[in-house]
Image 1 (cartoon, rainbow, N blue to C red):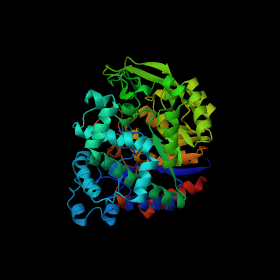
Image 2 (image 1 turned 60 degrees about the vertical axis):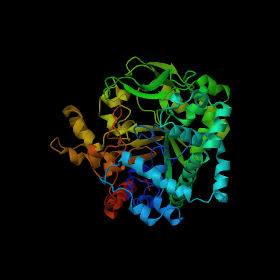
Image 3 (image 1 turned 90 degrees about the vertical axis):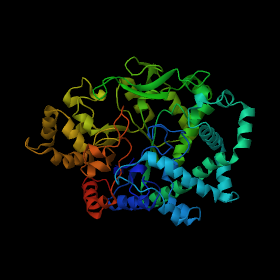
Image 4 (image 1 turned 90 degrees about the horizontal axis):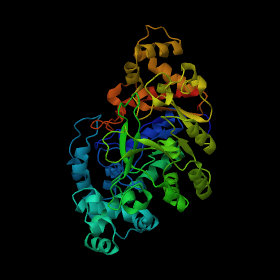
Amino acid sequence: MKRKSGILLPIFSLPGKYGIGGFTKEAYRFVDFLVKAGQSYWQILPIGPTSYGDSPYQSFSTFAGNPYFIDLDELKAQGLLTARELRELPEVAKEHAIDYEMLYHSRYKLLKKAYRRRNPEDSEYRRFLDENEDWLKDYALFMAIKDANGGVSFTRWDERLRKREAEALRDFEAEHPEEIGFYCFLQYHFFRQWYQLKQYANEHGISIIGDIPIYVAADSADTWSRPELFQMDEEGHLTAVAGCPPDGFAAKGQLWGNPLYRWENHEKDHFSWWTERIRACSRLYDVIRIDHFRGFDQYYSIPATDETAERGHWEDGPGIRLFEALSENLGELDIIAEDLGYMTDSVRQLVRDTGFPNMKVLEFAFDGRDSSTAGVKEAENEYLPFNYHQNCVAYTGTHDNETLLGWLHSISPAEQHYVKEYLGLPQRTALGKLVDPLIRLVHSSVADLAIIPLQDYLGLDNRARTNRPSTIGTNWMWRVDKKDLNASLAKRIRALSGIYGRI
């Protein structure tokens, strides 16, 4: 990895007129903005179809794409939608916030109109179905059965469908071909548009850093189609769930609720499911960031019936064996290891053994609440820039952190004092005046790659925060105003990247 820089901005946070960011002209304009700003990377969050809670880390499939990102104007250009139908879409109430309920009730109705106008004999479409049959058939069937059952979890379906009895599945397919075909149609247009956008980015010197969660969602095509790979009983109910133990940010820990893997079953077939997952991601992205990398060394297991993460315990993961298998099956991989939280010597050793760059988050350098730095002396804190090494990716914060400005206001007076002292600024310096020097600190570090969330370049407070872990209601909603992606900001970012040799 060469010395470069990039910006973190989820697809859903792009500007646009249809209520959520997507593969629209605004996405191409953002690529142009990155080029003007002298950037080399665009980091995004997972782009799978979201389920309850709208989190990109809780998806109905680890292989499918989010239909909300499909460019409706492109469908209109293909004659699949009309201008009148687009005008009749509900108006966006809040320019900077996504209304997922509105999207759910309006977007699928519109996309079904496009589906009814499709050309089922389109050779490109037929080829897509054939090339993706290994995951697409199960996903489309899963979603169609879910719709037929009012959206309830597959654990509440008729037993014959829940347990995938061959005759029951054949009967359902025969009775619901259009419903199944609709979900195949959505995936075709999602991937067609995504690869066009990615090609445009790559041709303009921008590489895409994609993000994949270590775990899948409990109610997903993945768990329904391959239950033997997860810690579930015969009825599909989880026996243990994923999460994190209590720390300074969450007194009762984080209860994610994702199913844990039966690693012994993955290892029996040489990690074939993981091989196909990473193979698919390697087509989608130029670089893959794997969330919660420490879970491959040890993972936190919580009884499925518990309401908090307090009674969980650590269990051993597959460790280096998984990555040796991936390397053997797929060759050299461009992966970033998100190794944050509850660091141990064995996690550090696993990252070193893989050779993957790990992550450094500047906010953790000064914030005693983070579990990664618990009990560490100030000068020994590995997130302080003078402790960075070259093979890492440095951030001011991630999607799970406060914005830089919001964080500065939330830390203790003693920690604020330390930040100013570290920056060599007078103690009377206003907190808002610390944002740019902290961004500069990341750029000036020895880290090969510096990634800054767009909100920090804009100097926004926590109203623009992407996610607050362990909460629901206001997450994954923030969107940037297109007027903020202006020449002045691009010039400022370009100068910063240039002075520190990142262009």
